[in-house]
Length: 545
Image (tube, rainbow, N blue to C red; front, top):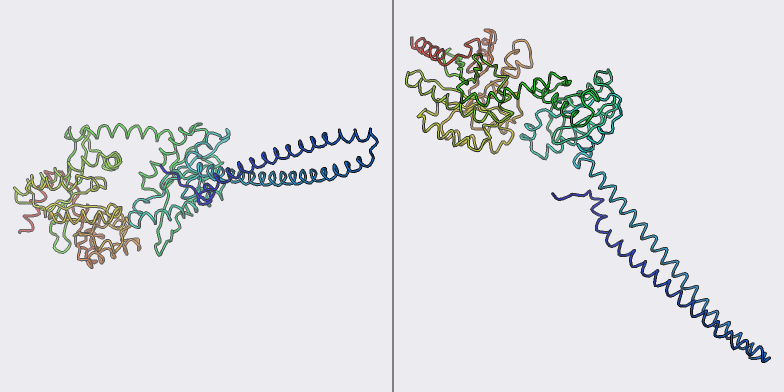
């Protein structure tokens, strides 16, 4: 991987070879001047010796006039030699001064480069925060006093980047990490960026102290403030996992492993929460590993089955379709969907399981077609399944082999999946639409789709998430969201269905707001295949009568 240097370092690096050559040349000149000075002084010394001999002879002979002339001539020669020596000494001093200056420049430039490289080696280039290796080194040097280690991640960051682009993602990371750093450092914490939207904070207080609770509260309050960029206002939250040093580990590996286990639990809980590590979390992790192993064999053992929840039209109370819901019967007992579907999604098992669901739904459609009670069947498509390379070809082959009318198969896809790569999603949706399949946005209102993209999605239906339906009778904001979604869907020529409808009051409100369809216990709970068949037959008979 190519190393990218900061601009200041990049400007200094090309100069260093020239600085070294200048120093070398000046040192050679100093040596030459020193040799020249030695030669001149040697010649002067030799001249003095040569002139002293004749002078002594003249003195012994009593030639006073000759002595005077000799002394005068020797004085002139000595003066010339002294002047030459003085000039060489000055040249020597000048060259030594220049050499010292260039050497000092070279040393200082090298020091600056080394300082910049040392900073880069220990810090994240995007945010300027210390990175994972620095964090691990810091943990190795901790004293024995209690500290709290917090790992965190920005919730729904991938969805936000998918909707607004990677350039926005970089700006958001820089801005949020700055706010996280200010909030944490204001409470005595040290912030490190690990990777992506993940970070770590080291607090000097025990995890169960009031100071720690106040620090985390201040951190979450800061991040919950909206992030604004080029007219966009994004609301974010944090998933946090905390472990205690030295209680939960004295080495970085154990501390990070345990804090990460707590973080993953916070993410699975839906985010915007802090989970404290405990040994029970490791026990749960072991249980998840065992569950994953059993889930891998569930298809071949015939333990998976589909239940079908009927959907009702609100204008004439007619049965208009069913949603196929996955169930796992393990050791004769049904496993709750929230105990294995997220695990299947995380492990990648959701792709083969999702393919099995499509195949089972088509087999059931074939059976209902033969009995004359066929209705559209909605099937949830997971994010991984939607993004799998063979998804489209598998559907094409399945429709061809089963002979099922494509209009009777509806795919429900969450808006978050579509927004992760909107352009690619639009292209794939158009191909699915060309097959004759029905398309619906599931859990609408929980993602970050923009109206511009929503109008481009080739879809037929919006499905209002049950979290808005549940309290819409008592919570004004949720009531407004439901009404706005119904109006938006109709303005785009889409039908709208509300899921999770459990009370007659909720049903009455949806009728008053002209919602098209409902799904929920108010109409029917999910039914096994045999019971669903009877429900369809009874509904057809009642509607015919």
